[in-house]
Amino acid sequence: MGCRQSFRQCCDRPKNTNVRISLPAVCFVWQIAMIILFGIFIRYDQESDAHWIEYRKSQNISSDIENDFYFRYPSFQDVHVMIFVGFGFLMTFLKRYSFSAVGFNFLIAAFGLQWALLMQGWFQSLDPMDGKIKISMESLINADFCVASCLIAYGAVLGKLSPVQLMVMTLFGITLYAVEEFIILNLIHARDAGGSMVIHTFGAYYGLSISWMLYRPNLDQSKRLNGSVYHSDVFAMIGTLFLWMFWPSFNSAITDHGDGQHRAAINTYLALASTVLTTVAISSLSQKTGKLDMVHIQNSTLAGGVAVGTAAEFMLMPYGSLIIGFCCGIISTLGYIYITPFMEKYLKIQDTCGIHNLHAMPGVIGGIVGAITAAAASERVYGKEGLINTFDFTGEWKDMVPSRQGGHQAAGLCVALCFGVGGGIIVGCILRIPVWGDAPDDNCFDDELYWELPEEEESIPPILEDNNHMRNRDVTESHFSMEQSQN
Image: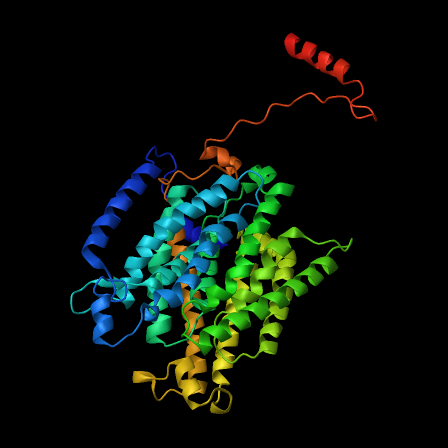
C-alpha cells in the first residue's frame, strides 16, 4: 500500500488542469506518422514482391504453392478473427459498455498492429543491406500476437480508461512487447510458440500493474453498471466460442511447417476440451444450488489454451495436454471465486475481466510446463533430428542440451514477468497525468460518455387478449386508438 502511494506522489500532477488531449488529434497525428514511417522503412519481403516470379524461376520452384502465403494465411485469418471478434465480444459482458468493448478493441488493435510491424521489424526483420523492414504473412501474424498482449491488458482496465489512455497504454505495451520478445526468443533462445510467456504472462501482468497504479477507491459509485444482463452475457459467450474454436490456430500459427504445427494444434485442441469439462464441474460445485456461473464458462474454459501455449509444439503427449487443461480449469475457476475478490480487497487491484485467472496464472503455468517439458526432452522421444528441429539447436545453439534449454525457458518466464510488472508500473505513472480525459468514478462502465447512443424504444401499452386469440380485437384496437389520440 505504501509503495503504491509513494509512486503516486511521484507521478501525480495537479488535477485542476484544463488541458485535454483529444482523440481526433491523436488518431490523425498517429496515422500521418505511420504513413511517413512506413514510407521510410517498410517494404514487401521476397515472397510478396513482384520479383517473386523471377526468384521462383531462378530457384527451380515449380509452383506458387511454395509461397508462404498458402501455408500461413489460413492461420493468420483465424488469429485475426480472434483479435477483432473473439477479444472484442468477450468483453461485452458489461450491461452498458458493449459499444466501448467492441469499438475500443477495434481501435487499439488497428492502432497497435501498425506500430507492432515497425517495432518487431526493427528488432527481427531489418534487412542490413538496405535498412528496410521486409514484412510477410508471418509478420502480420506476429503483429496480431503483439496486439493480443495489449488487448489482454485492456481487460484489466475495461470501463475505467478513456480511448486516449488506451492508445497510450497500447503504444508503450507494444514497445515493451517487442523488446521482451526479442530478449526471450532471440537472446535467451526460449521457445514459446503459443505465447504463454511472451503474450499472456506479459500482457496480463502489464494490465494488472496498470490497474494497481490507477486504483480507484470510489469505484463503487459505478457499481450499478459493473455487471451484466442476460443479453450482454450471451454476446460475451460469442467471443468465448470464437476464441475457443480458433485457439489451435493461435498456438500453431508460427510453428515450423509439418509435425510441429500439427502437434501444436492437437495439443491445444485437447487441452481446451479438458478445460471445458473441468470448468463446468468446478463452477457447479462452487454454487450451493449446483447451477453454473456464466462468468466461469465465458473465461475459465479458455485457460487450457493459454497454458499449453509454450509447450504446444513439444512432445507433450495427448494425455499431457488433457492434464494441463484439467489443472487450469480448476485453478482458473477457483481464481474467479476466491482470488479476484481477494486482489481487489487487499491488493487494491481492480481487475474488471479477471485476466489474472484467464491469462496470468495459466500463462505462468504454461511457462513452467514448457521449462519442465524442455528439460525432460530426449533423443528417444524426439529422435536426433527431431530434437534439433523442435528446439532449433542450430548455429550458435548447436551445442545446447535439453536440460540447459529448460533453464533458458525458465529465464524467459522471469523476463516476461519483469517486463509486465515493471512496464505496467511505469506506464501507470504516465497514465495518471491528468491530460488524458479519463472517466470520473461515477461514470465508469458507461458508453454514454464516449458514444452517441440510440434512443430507448418507446414503451407501447399492452394489448389485452383473451384466451380466444383476440376475439375482442375490434374493441381493443378502438380503445388503443382513443388512448393514442388523447396523448
